[in-house]
Amino acid sequence: KFPRHAAVVAAKEMLSPAHFDGLFKFAFVRNPWDRLVSAYHHFQREQHSLLQSQRILEFCDFAKWIVTDCGSYRGPKHVFVAAVRGHQVNHLVDLQGTRIVDFVGRYEQLEQDFRKICERIGIPTPGLPHQRKSRKRRDFRTYYDDPTAELVQSFYQADVAGFRYSFDSQAVG
Image (cartoon, rainbow, N blue to C red; front, side, top):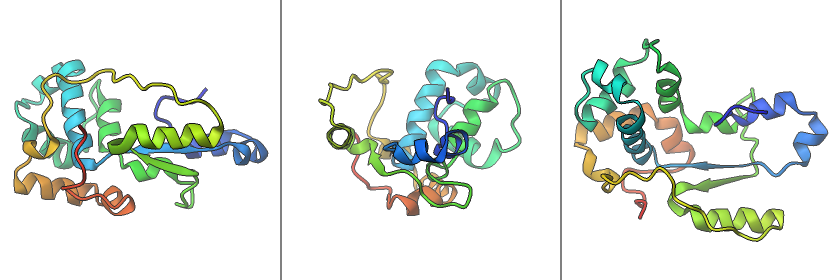
């Protein structure tokens, strides 16, 4: 059993080459600016004590902390912080940095890309429930001022370039 959100390299290293090569491997990525707003709402809901301990009151404080200030954080919520800081592109590559997934879907077109995956593996496409939806959530772009948007672009440059995202990429409806 692989940990939740495990990188594909874990499967490549743990499975036989024949088994791994015979699998259809896919992943979903998300616009880095939107992903960080989603993480902020997750922390507000489920890791509020960490925000309090770091005196984080607003999204821009959270973004700045994640991107610049929390690199040495080793508190009880370290795993959550490390997951948010991690680049998505790193989950899709082998030890040499070669992308080893067969399909990369986008969260911004989740249903459409999920349908493609279901067609590829030959199963009917089930409905996708939306769980853990924030009731306070707005379009991700409204959370940013220019310096914070640029900070996030710089920090997540591997994802921005690797998946051709921009700040103005399609918002999630």
